[in-house]
Image (cartoon, rainbow, N blue to C red; front, side):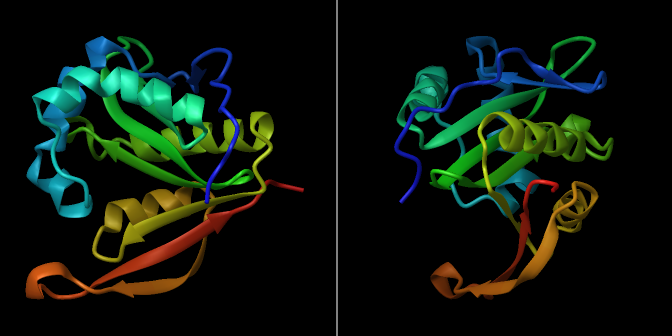
Length: 182
């Protein structure tokens, strides 16, 4: 399941004056790849770190995700310098429902960047993409991500316990949702 129509990117970068959310560029890929190897990032993500091939094809894969309607991968950049400081992605579950995922690069954590980016993307998704619902999942042990969800107006729906691979302890995931303001 997912979206069957292409996603129209924002007509201009989304910004609040501190962060900018924009399309990925080839010049962003080194920072994205480096962050994918960070141990703290690895702790929360299920997909593997970016290898050389993935780094080289990253922009083309992002463009295909937009065209296919599967996802809307974006970069979070410092509004003053345009330096990439994180990523945010809408992953479509249906034509009008998407899950929001985000990560802030290690040197930029603890500054409210993720919450700012999530609020910008949420407003754009409801306004321009006419989504009826956004979902967000965060590991129960990831207190920073839980705070981002709450600060961004998402409401907690419950918790799901996921079986762990290779005999590790099961992980609990907090489930959040948000709908457009009336």
